[in-house]
View: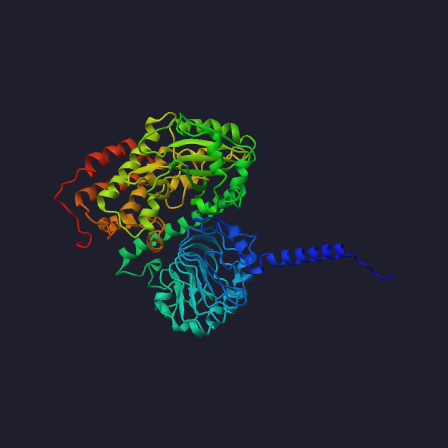
Length: 595
């Protein structure tokens, strides 16, 4: 019997088939799925990945991604210097048309995925300036198109794989400033490279670096003229100092990996993968506004109406505590909105009690919390908006330079804000995450301390994790990293690091520090040991006064002492800044190029 379909049935069937085809065509490509896996493994960033949307047909318009115009396959992944923290997903190995992988100057930790050996079209790998550890994968020897390989300034260990010698097209190689050991293979293309490709690895030996290998026991060993052998007489003092720095770098790198893994797992579990989505849904599902002391002269209805309009376009910041949006009201007033995901069932009562306390704290050098929006899924904290952005941005991302007076003024404001939290507000507050991105600037470059109290708010009471989840590597005091116990003195240490960052214009874990001690404190100690501490000053900083500089360095050195008992209180820091740093001899200027 034949099948007969009336006109309406044909239309229905046609519509169904059309929808199936369209849905299939809209499905994200395999390359896109691999990149989403990469994004999932990234715990935090400067927001560069927020617009990677799974509903796109392909990732070709995503930031940092370039596709072949015809095949729509990913050929470039370029995300350098975006504060990316997390592991590098092995799913990148599925990008079999990838030609350039550029992830340098970030905070990636863990191992280099061996799956990258599947990306046989790769011509350039740039992973320098991260915290990658483990071995160099021998699978990289499969990449016969590879021309440039830079994995320098990480914490890689073990031997250099023999397989790298088979990369006939390799024109540039840099594995310097790691913890590699053993003989450098001399077979194949590796014989073409010189000491600059391998420097800063104290355990390497070979013809390329003019260090003889001992093979009597069948395994690699150190050059007999190296400082470890005790036979180097001419440069003993120099080498012993470098050995101490290298040892501290090793310990620091191991602590970093442990801390980052813990921090990453916590944030991934607690704060969720897609913090930037669902803001409108938060407030539309039933929300209420709590205002502190009349600080928000708007009705709850007006505020919620504005909150519903916010999307990714309004994001102005992204960090461990949540995503920050710019909230502009109809009368022209602008606020900053921080979205924090709820953690557990008891979150509401504890959070609201603590927010009442934070909302009552008012000080010239603190960012003002004006109120919050209580929704079923999150808390939306409403702060004053600071048009000058963060100190991190002012130091590291803007073309205009801060002069000496501006830097001193910022340091002074941050010190007074922190001193108020420690000594004068009730209850007293330990910040736990003092860093340049948590120092905000108004239009006159006056400093305001932000995010105070949030580390305590986000404690995980169930697992008894109280402090180790707070803080940023490079700013953390040694005892804090070991015990996870925060005190006023751990804040003082972080403030000392902040001072060094403002002085130098370099981040605490700048890649250039790795060989000199991993972070900015190690660099300072090295300079002090050679009476060259003035060299820490940013050469672009104008108007530096020598007496003021020496006094500020003295304060910073006290703050970053390895012994908490030797660090001053923040009240004392403010006194020293006011009496010795802010009132130098006006005629005594320091030329950073003269020493």
